[in-house]
Amino acid sequence: MSVQVRRSPLRSFGKLCAILFYLCFALFPIYWLVKISVTPDQLVYTEGTKLWPSTATLGNFGKVIFQTDFLIFFRNSLFVSLSTAAVTTLIAAAGGYAFSRFEFSGKRILVALLLLTQMFPLLMIIAPIYRIVAALGLLNSLPSLILVYTAFNIPFATFLMQSFFDGIPKDLEDAAMMDGCSRFQALRKVILPLTLPGLGATLGFIFTAAWSEILFALMLIRSNDAMTFPVGLLTFVSKFSVDWGQMMAAGVLALVPSCIFFIFIQKYLVQGLTSGAVKG
Image (cartoon, rainbow, N blue to C red):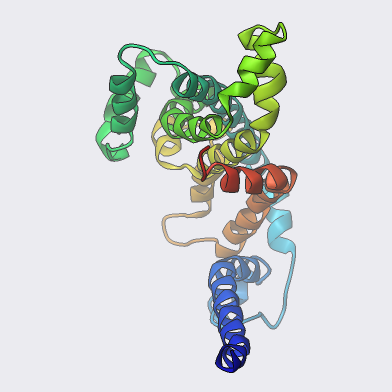
């Protein structure tokens, strides 16, 4: 007993050090992003290795907002990410419920096909996707990104939602239907309220994936009016130089919607990650 007591403070200290190391490791890129964003252009290369510039300025933020198309890129990314998250979560909820509650012919084959779509590298299918989008007349348009992002995120989101539905006893639906509810009413009034954590987790994952995606956005979008934020960052790179200050300032501003979004869904996201990990 005495040995365990003496070891306990040391073990707690070790855990604390590990947590602090992880936090520093995870937050250091964000700190460096902020540091470069407030560094004047003439000091970026001369004081680039310092922990903080000798002179800080918010001029880069003003240039990004008022002298570039950042607000257009920001608006486009917000529209695409929110639309993709909403549509994908709605479809995934329906698909996850069907996989969880019904047995039908070809179910295993369909599950295998959905899993198979996650095994192909995106570089292998970017050309066929480009041809399909071009044939549909959707090049240089935000709907093309929403369509592609939704299609590629549905399999993962469906399996994620299925895990949450599997964790809800079927007896709850049976009891609701015995009380006079139809299956749709039981789903809407009983099951969906219990899956709010799962919906929040799915929304968070899909929003993040759509917000940071660059490959399809780079291939399918050419005009500045339809560019999303990740592609818009490339406009700060010229042939002979890179405007690091403005690029980092744009990156800091791009963190704002993600932080606000996760603040609102944090409660459901944490519940969803914990409850979805255990079935039954």
